[in-house]
Length: 241
Image 1 (cartoon, helix red, strand yellow):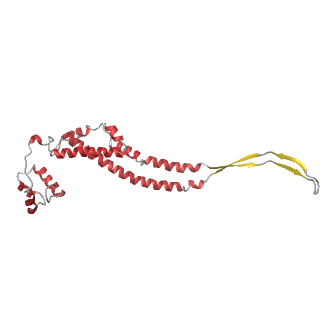
Image 2 (cartoon, rainbow, N blue to C red):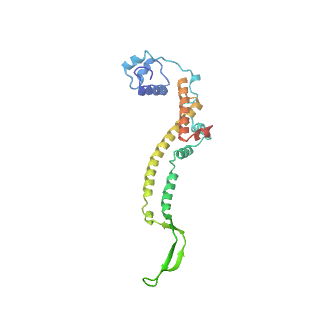
Image 3 (cartoon, rainbow, N blue to C red):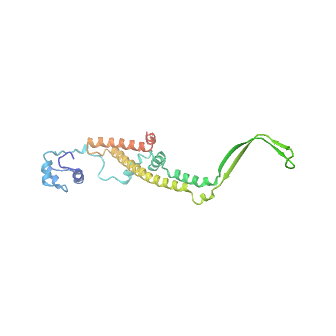
């Protein structure tokens, strides 16, 4: 893509052609690449050079390895956390685990079996009770009460909420929001996890076209490790170190 006029698609076609045909015998072979026009070829032939890659510098992987060799390469990383474990940790870190939402919903339903309790307190000042037999007679003392305090406790049950609980509607909305967030998190975890594994196997196999590709792959491997670390709150690095 550093050549004038060569975009990403054309660069990919050139690389695919080279990989399929085993390299270019001459610069004119570039004309065999799908979509290569004479005008573009004349532009890039002044900049492009043809090099021969010795067998010692080529990847030591055969053109097609056996299934057992593929399995052996993958098993070299069996000690690292599985994709399922990384997913679980990422959801916990984001507070988006489905079990948490189910717990909220269950507690919202159970809460209405408990009464709403109201309490109160009021002072009651002492007073004297008197009586009289008839109008005009003097009052006759009967009793005297001292000062005291009155405490009130009231319990209410609202069983209609067992049929329709508005809190469940709010929890349902949160459940939907969390589901969308879980989908995005899991999608990114899957993408980063397996891209990182591909780069690990590529590094193990030394399957690079040149030094620049090797450096780029090493940096990308670090980038993906950092991303998984960020999605799990630092848990991932602790497990692979």
